[in-house]
Image 1 (cartoon, rainbow, N blue to C red):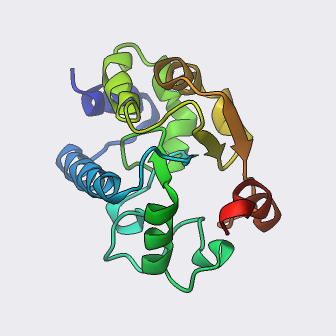
Image 2 (image 1 turned 45 degrees about the vertical axis):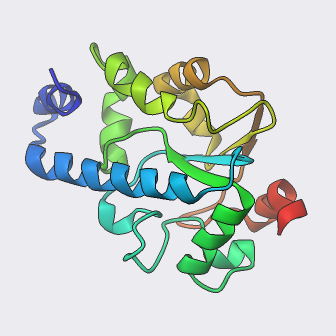
Length: 189
């Protein structure tokens, strides 16, 4: 079964129906944009900012046609707009990585606990393994919310990727905590 089929089967119990082709198309667009961003990035990566997942390609941070980001506002990093923010991330070795490769609304991840679904590990491990070869022992990992580290997928992520340093930037609503941003990224801001 594909990952989307596994998710779809579980969602039937909640009377939720995904549009499989649209989700697969969105996922392909997200993966392509991420791969393109990775090619431009200074390596080794200094920081990996781990988010939950993008809800759609339209709101994806590496979608250069989308004018805004969902929580990493340019001003938090001393930038004027998203394009400048992405150039800053490239130059400073900051990579945004989503724990879940599927562009779905947050409530679906809360309902399903994707990593605990039978058959998902073969779909998640290759996604997580994309970080191997671009990080080193000095790469620092940053999460938006600590609750992300309590999900079943997090243990698999940490086991697959392996890292030492973890920070949380917290925040409220749609913005990251500016004081935490300054504390974590201070030397490069």
